[in-house]
Image (cartoon, rainbow, N blue to C red; front, side, top):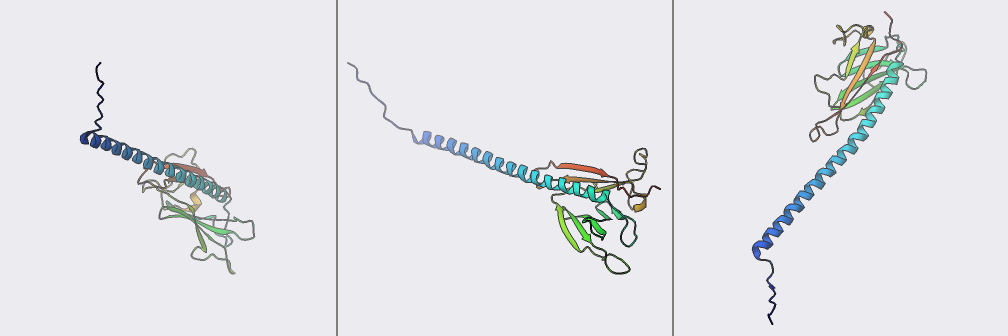
Length: 206
């Protein structure tokens, strides 16, 4: 009767090294995929939350600008209109005081400065009394102005619209706010684009 000879020899050193190397490579690839997925998911969450906040800010901006009115000192409802800055007057808290609202960009943040009228004769402080951040991750470049302005003939006048700065506020019939939002433009270059048009109700007809 033949004897059955079993080969009890284990893995050779070379086979062990190869197997270990493959395992290390697989673990490394898996780790990179998991880390990448973590950062992507974190970006998606952060971007989504930030976009929601900016959308809320745009709705608030739209409501305030739509109700812009003459200041308590008698000044026209829009004080200054620039590519990255807009100053106008509106009563935002339903009291007897019309506030000066100052929207501007600083360090990729959209900020809102507010000042109440003071004294007699009525005037407004030179600087904003309070400033708060109302939007983060604003990444508009030099060719993407935050604010654009249109005259009262914006529906038919394609030659002069949007208006070029410097702008006489009395010429403005409609304002566009145009924002590119990205909380991490270095890692994820695709930005969220949001825009809306606002026509102040109290602009002069002529």
